[in-house]
Amino acid sequence: MDGPRHPLIVTTDPALLDDLRRVAAAAATEITVARTPEQAFRSWPRAPLVVVGPDLEPALRGSGPESGPRPILVTRSLDPRPTGPHGPPSGPGPWSPADRGGEDGAPSFALPRDEAALVELFSSIDEHGTAPVVSVIGGRGGAGASLLAIALALAAGRAGRATALLDADPLGHGPDVHLGHEHPSSSPPRTGWGDLVDRRSRTPWRILREGLPRSGRVSMLTWARDDEDTQGLPLPAGTARSVLDSARRGVDLVVVDLPRSFDPATRALLNGSDLVLMVVPGDVRSVLSAARMVGRLREETDRLRLVVRGTREEVSASVVARNLRVELDADLPPEPGLSRVLAAGQVPARQPRSPMARYAHRVVSLLLDRRETG
Image (cartoon, rainbow, N blue to C red; front, side, top):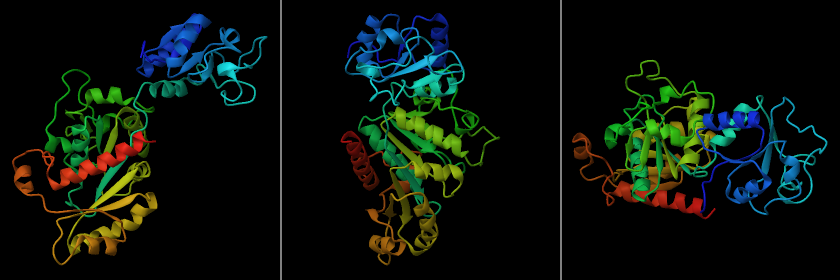
């Protein structure tokens, strides 16, 4: 495609342009500036967002490309509506009533009043769209939920997909311990959940990713081990929602390793998941423990599926599913040599032929296929 895909700013007002440059800087995105209608019409069809100042709105009214995004109007007064002799936009083209979201004007923002909303709008530009989210939770402690989350992330990475692995368990040891990782080689320093707790607006994933440990195509957000202020504390729900939204817009797949709790952040992550996998070992005590969680999980999601690991003769996967009343998604046999792999500090489910890796590949393929087919 010719030229960059940046928000298009259409104005000759230097004060308004300065304000919009500040908004773009806060959103960590570049912009394209058009100072004439002719320049605007050349860039409009490929722009992900078009912002028009009231000075050029009259010249654009009633004309413009047939394709491209609908424009938004930005002024510098507390009143977001234009106040000139021309009145609100009308006529055919991109300003037509069907496109502008109201009967008597284009979608409007006013600076400085709506600056935060504009930053949020600019932040969502030039990203991947909405990625599917798969969350994993253990039916009991030590069920292997973290290992499955890692396997899912690795499967997406092997498929060449950018993946976010969110470790939402403040009491876990973190997926980076299993995966090894590439420390970010430049500033800013490594980012953990504690660094995001006080942020008031969504940070684009491409910015967060710069400070995250990585393993191939997988970026991991976990808990900083040297952050004593946040160790063991649950996430604020707003932080969880904000980070999940950033990840969904910035990668191809999001994998969440959930804690076995139902605090507000965990509920928010469950609510935002396209698939929730509960991992339960195939033994009586594990089933009894998982049974206490099923009701709570169903209150937060209708996309719950069961993954049974290492079943024994007396408790088959079908018996586990029947007792828990959860649809069985997989019956995974014991992983050969898994304990030896973990003890040696090697990466679990790295081999594509392992049972867990094969299952992860199937789940990831289905989620990505659904996304691509709409």
